Image (cartoon, rainbow, N blue to C red; front, side):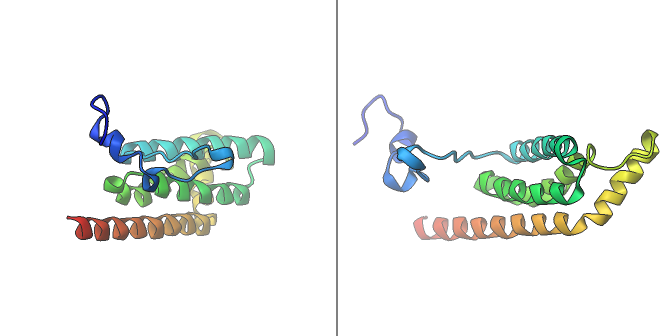
Length: 154
């Protein structure tokens, strides 16, 4: 029985099934739950920062940028709340395009930057589709598990 000062949510969340993954020395690994907007902001900011990092460290390697996109896709699909889980595959292509801005070649001016962005999107479509497909598969699996659990318990 939970103590009087403790909320029902805290009491439910304290069992072994809700503990989450434990890291070394028993520390809990992060298990954030982002809203649809929060997951969109997370992946847009993460991809922009990774694009800037790629520009600084690797001279704007589009392959490195594509590889860095994959973990962001997986984390976005895993960290979004179950109720907003279907938004993850929608925001990922937007984040890919925003993060491509610092990496894309710029021939000069706005039109040169836009042309570099379009070229980058065209040549890196495999990474974009692969990451979005991986996130979509994770999201669908999470959604199916959530629906089955709700049907079983309610």
